[in-house]
Image (cartoon, rainbow, N blue to C red):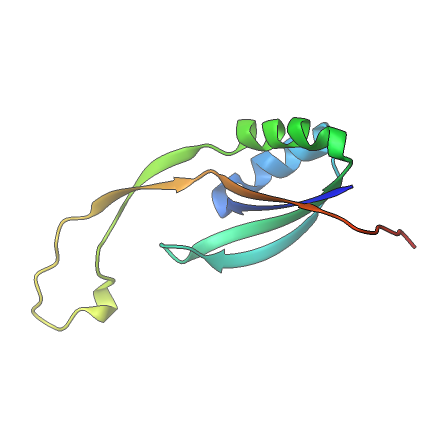
Length: 109
Protein backbone atom coordinates (compact mmCIF):
# COMPACT_ATOMS: atom_id res chain seq x y z
CA UNK A 1 0.00 0.00 0.00
CA UNK A 2 1.21 3.50 -0.88
CA UNK A 3 0.10 6.96 0.18
CA UNK A 4 0.36 9.57 -2.56
CA UNK A 5 0.25 13.16 -1.34
CA UNK A 6 -0.46 15.46 -4.26
CA UNK A 7 -0.50 19.28 -4.17
CA UNK A 8 -2.29 20.98 -7.08
CA UNK A 9 -3.26 24.54 -7.93
CA UNK A 10 -6.85 25.60 -7.14
CA UNK A 11 -7.58 26.04 -10.85
CA UNK A 12 -6.77 22.37 -11.47
CA UNK A 13 -8.80 20.91 -8.59
CA UNK A 14 -12.03 20.21 -10.50
CA UNK A 15 -10.28 18.62 -13.45
CA UNK A 16 -8.10 16.37 -11.30
CA UNK A 17 -10.83 15.29 -8.88
CA UNK A 18 -13.13 14.36 -11.78
CA UNK A 19 -10.31 12.39 -13.46
CA UNK A 20 -9.48 10.56 -10.23
CA UNK A 21 -13.10 9.58 -9.63
CA UNK A 22 -13.55 8.54 -13.27
CA UNK A 23 -10.51 6.23 -12.90
CA UNK A 24 -11.73 4.71 -9.62
CA UNK A 25 -9.34 6.43 -7.20
CA UNK A 26 -10.63 7.52 -3.78
CA UNK A 27 -9.06 10.52 -2.09
CA UNK A 28 -9.30 13.05 0.72
CA UNK A 29 -9.15 16.70 -0.31
CA UNK A 30 -7.57 19.32 1.98
CA UNK A 31 -7.49 23.04 1.18
CA UNK A 32 -4.00 24.51 1.47
CA UNK A 33 -2.06 27.65 0.63
CA UNK A 34 1.59 28.11 -0.13
CA UNK A 35 4.32 28.37 -2.62
CA UNK A 36 5.93 31.30 -4.32
CA UNK A 37 2.68 33.12 -5.16
CA UNK A 38 0.85 32.28 -1.92
CA UNK A 39 -2.18 31.21 -3.94
CA UNK A 40 -4.70 28.54 -3.06
CA UNK A 41 -3.80 24.91 -3.48
CA UNK A 42 -5.54 21.64 -2.86
CA UNK A 43 -3.73 18.76 -1.19
CA UNK A 44 -5.02 15.30 -2.07
CA UNK A 45 -4.32 12.25 0.06
CA UNK A 46 -4.67 9.13 -2.08
CA UNK A 47 -4.18 5.58 -0.85
CA UNK A 48 -3.44 3.00 -3.57
CA UNK A 49 -1.93 -0.42 -4.02
CA UNK A 50 1.70 -0.30 -5.16
CA UNK A 51 0.82 -1.69 -8.60
CA UNK A 52 -1.59 1.24 -9.18
CA UNK A 53 0.92 4.06 -8.49
CA UNK A 54 2.02 4.48 -12.10
CA UNK A 55 -1.58 4.65 -13.36
CA UNK A 56 -2.41 7.19 -10.62
CA UNK A 57 0.60 9.37 -11.47
CA UNK A 58 -0.33 9.24 -15.16
CA UNK A 59 -3.88 10.38 -14.30
CA UNK A 60 -2.49 13.27 -12.26
CA UNK A 61 0.01 14.22 -14.99
CA UNK A 62 -2.75 14.28 -17.62
CA UNK A 63 -5.00 16.47 -15.44
CA UNK A 64 -2.55 19.10 -14.16
CA UNK A 65 -0.52 21.11 -16.62
CA UNK A 66 1.75 24.07 -15.94
CA UNK A 67 0.89 27.42 -17.51
CA UNK A 68 2.39 30.90 -17.63
CA UNK A 69 1.10 33.74 -15.47
CA UNK A 70 2.29 37.31 -15.04
CA UNK A 71 2.91 38.51 -11.46
CA UNK A 72 4.18 41.71 -9.90
CA UNK A 73 7.54 41.40 -8.19
CA UNK A 74 6.41 43.47 -5.19
CA UNK A 75 2.85 43.37 -3.91
CA UNK A 76 1.35 46.90 -4.07
CA UNK A 77 0.92 47.10 -0.28
CA UNK A 78 4.60 46.21 0.36
CA UNK A 79 6.11 49.00 -1.73
CA UNK A 80 6.66 52.43 -0.15
CA UNK A 81 4.66 55.32 -1.64
CA UNK A 82 6.30 56.66 -4.79
CA UNK A 83 8.30 53.49 -5.41
CA UNK A 84 8.86 52.45 -9.00
CA UNK A 85 6.89 49.28 -9.77
CA UNK A 86 8.76 47.02 -12.19
CA UNK A 87 6.96 45.31 -15.04
CA UNK A 88 5.19 42.04 -14.21
CA UNK A 89 7.30 38.90 -14.47
CA UNK A 90 6.22 35.72 -16.28
CA UNK A 91 6.25 32.61 -14.04
CA UNK A 92 5.03 29.03 -14.39
CA UNK A 93 2.04 28.02 -12.23
CA UNK A 94 -0.11 24.95 -11.96
CA UNK A 95 0.95 21.40 -12.43
CA UNK A 96 1.24 19.05 -9.48
CA UNK A 97 3.72 17.87 -6.89
CA UNK A 98 3.43 14.22 -5.83
CA UNK A 99 5.01 12.46 -2.87
CA UNK A 100 4.76 8.66 -2.83
CA UNK A 101 5.25 7.01 0.56
CA UNK A 102 5.08 3.49 1.91
CA UNK A 103 2.20 2.73 4.26
CA UNK A 104 3.12 0.38 7.08
CA UNK A 105 -0.45 -0.38 8.09
CA UNK A 106 -3.90 0.41 6.71
CA UNK A 107 -7.26 -0.18 8.39
CA UNK A 108 -10.76 0.95 7.47
CA UNK A 109 -13.42 1.09 10.21
